[in-house]
Amino acid sequence: MKRYISRISTIEIPVSNLNESIHWYTSLLGLEVTHRDDTTAVLTFDSLGVPGIFLCETKSENRLQFLNTNNDIKHSVIDFYTNDLNGFYNFLIEQGVQVGTYNMITEFDTGGFGFEDPDGNLLGACNAIQRGQE
Image 1 (cartoon, helix red, strand yellow):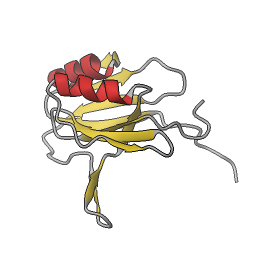
Image 2 (cartoon, one colour):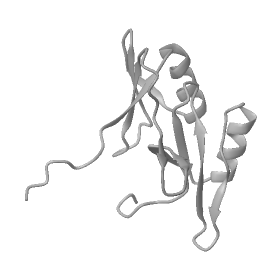
Image 3 (cartoon, rainbow, N blue to C red):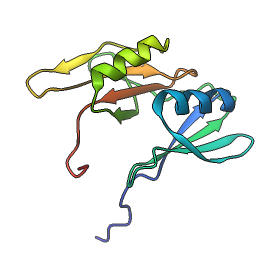
Image 4 (cartoon, rainbow, N blue to C red):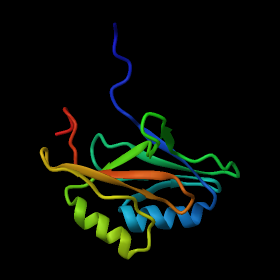
């Protein structure tokens, strides 16, 4: 079978206030704005092969998250990679961001935690590198 898809281009995130969200994503996550109009913006990490973030202002109250009915844990749809998980966790707390429990699997020295953007989209941060990402 021919392979038509080679990577993720953008991740689309619903927001209620585009200006506030642009400020939050650029100042806290280090993204840069590459396009903007009245109701949408494209942000990038400016790294080869890394998907962009497409912010879409909407009145819809649907947010990014799902409940794992096997263990009743809410999951993020997006996990951002950081090589300094503890430092990023503490930085977000200092900035007043709502963060979840810091989870580490000491056997593999990997872990992560959830955090919310201003609209309640559940995001994640982890230090796990998947095969083919390096």
